[in-house]
Image: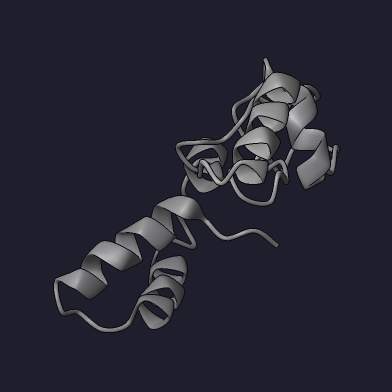
Length: 103
């Protein structure tokens, strides 16, 4: 299961403020927010992509999993690039940059 990116980011900010360590804070936030969870879009993160199945910006920014519980599609990371415009040219550019030590 993918993490909730909003809760993870909130836990990071609280860790920086000296409120504990990020994983424990994250677990606490999930418990506290159980009755009022973050939206699927918040869970997916700010760099999420649009799921072609449910038409919402709910493809998790890291795992590519659709965070919408009503969506039946289980997207994989490789599926994620199919949803991004210009993904193939960017993939080729990244390979070129890595081959030429430009990263």
